[in-house]
Image (cartoon, rainbow, N blue to C red; front, side, top):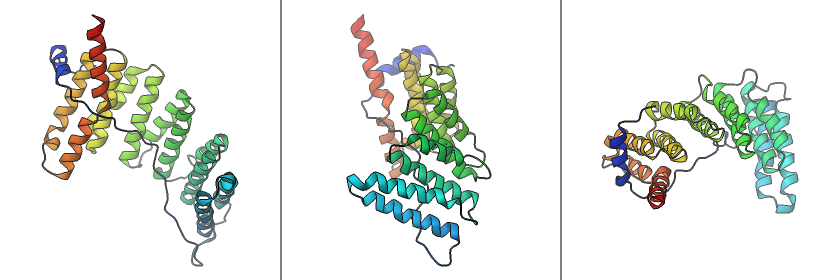
Length: 271
């Protein structure tokens, strides 16, 4: 995959600025608290009671917290047994149960809940979240093949928010890299970097794309991708607006900058 002339890319190596790293976060939590109400159906009341137990688990003393987490998880799992439980509410409850089960150190049970939330008539938003959280679970266990499959499924959920699908594609690229599949991972990142409507997601994709070349010691290609990123975001970065300031900060904090500087210094010292 071409990233521009090698000579121009090599020249970009000397233009690097120091910076930090953009962090990769697990998918956001899927629901806000709901209070029980007589006007609610049985499933909604069960969900609200489960949330009350969830809040109590967060406030429980250390010695009582795991039991409280398991109790709250059981309450969320019971939501789907309500006669009026919708596919959406059941999926939301399964995601909450999975989070609690992970906190209670029961990843196998958490996995079962996440898999359940990917099935049936679950709306695209929650199905995408479930696949992404399943990928994150597998990633934490360093089961990269399973993580890749889950993240790819999340990225391909039609009708899910673009941001969720793009985040999943970036996570899938990392799994590709861990499996030694660099070309496949770079294709995913290039697509996000070029097509995303979120400039910060684009920068994150460029960052990971360039860093993959540092990992394979192709420093000129890494510098070329970094320059592509700067060119693609230059107009926004020059804005004298709060967004422009955030874009400049994100560019300065790209992880690849420090990695590339260290790699260039190591190559120079080895001569």
